Image (cartoon, rainbow, N blue to C red; front, side, top):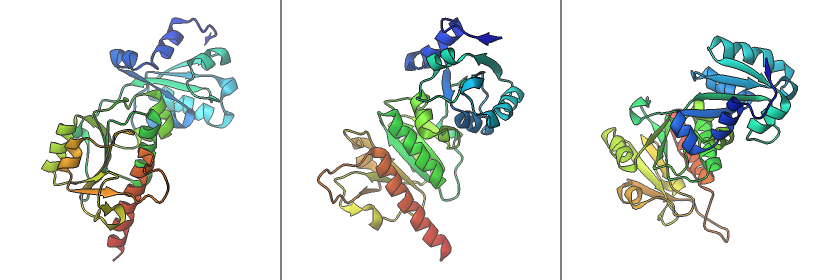
Length: 268
């Protein structure tokens, strides 16, 4: 059976899941895109329902993804192009959208390496920025991303989209700032706070040992909690007229400096 009516109650419910209140009430999230759904399945996410639209899908991965989703226990629901376009939240949809349990990860769920590298994202407001931070974290192979006092929830469909599915490949935990700070202290992980007012350039900072790179909200930066309790504060030198970088860009710059330093150390 193919759902062809945009007024179908199930379709209306999917549309409502774009809203944070509805997601939190139902404990659900949306995952749109063939690649994103594949990454979710590969990383153990148990999907409730997979909506698919063959006319919008690329033929090559369709059969394989349907089989993978079916074997995972997900319900498979075919919909018409007009119905899928009503559900889709991205431009040029590829005909795949899944409903999954919302991610609820705690600090206790994080598994750390002997020399951990983490990112702390405090009160980041824009889903696109949070998603971009996750992409950088995945590329750098960090131990985890700690989202503190979030202004946007990690289950936001636009976080999934901007992260290109790395929300499911990176260990992510949400916590209050004080809780995260205490957790890092207990494990001997230094905190490097990124702030324009720091005297120390990020390239001159020692980022080789266990460290968490902390970045703050787009407009105000890190709160006093992190600035006053950080082991070091670092800045990215600015040569232009505007003394500001996108928070996701700033996180990536400092993160890959840490990777560079660690790589040099391991090669010596």
